[in-house]
Length: 340
Image 1 (cartoon, one colour):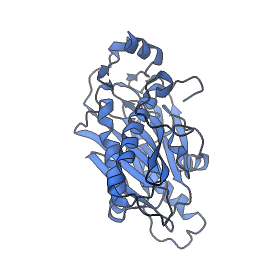
Image 2: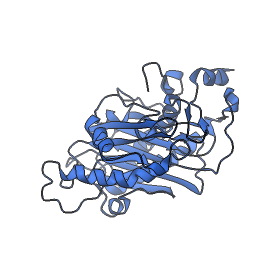
Image 3: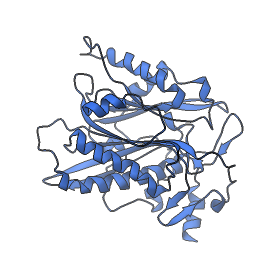
Image 4: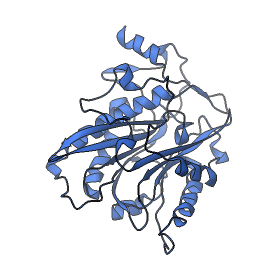
């Protein structure tokens, strides 16, 4: 994302009626920071790592979390313990499939060095991945420890860079170049206001859908990429400051994956479609009753849909090591099509 790159809301394509937070990003949730390290050596390597760092998280201070696999064709490290205990005890990192294991090891090393972790003998690193092998030399496993530490060190609470950055550098979705996207919503809950933010690592198959209309590269005057197996993945991370337990957060994580259908996702055999939801609420306040979760569900659906659109609009055309090309979604062409 640059100062001149329009986002979905700038084009009148914001979703839903709930207001956004000040940055329209996952970092609008108090205590959430995001950092990226981008690893490139064109045309061979387009990869990286993205860190989502909740304030104060650690093996001695886990946060409630829920996880949902819409289609489990992936290598989401650490999810069995997360599902069993309903707790996230490390920052969440996103990267390329074959780099995920190096990234997880680097995350373990970083956590063990943190103050208060001197006696830790076991921890559960959580690392999500998507396959960037179309546009990057995935077998080179280019993301290493220094990149992980840089992403964690750069994590901040301001606007979040989108598109071809961090883990999203080599990703594509819906026949366009994609990557990282984010959005947020501020919503009313019983007796209080809450914020929900979404961050997507978009890399999935299907045909882009805007409302009832489908949009293909040909519709925008772009070259049509050759047909490929309908594979890919999407990791969606939701964060909120609403007081929720792991069971309620798992219900919320399901909506993160459901929301991809609005954008045209195909949920194919070879796609890993995952949702992870966490709360930063460290409070004794009563949990949100199940009957009052609807505003959070609505916020999740709208924020995820808009985050995917933001990932497409921010991405730039990229050529991979074998000559494969995925074009960014050109805002001007898109508006002409929609208004024509």
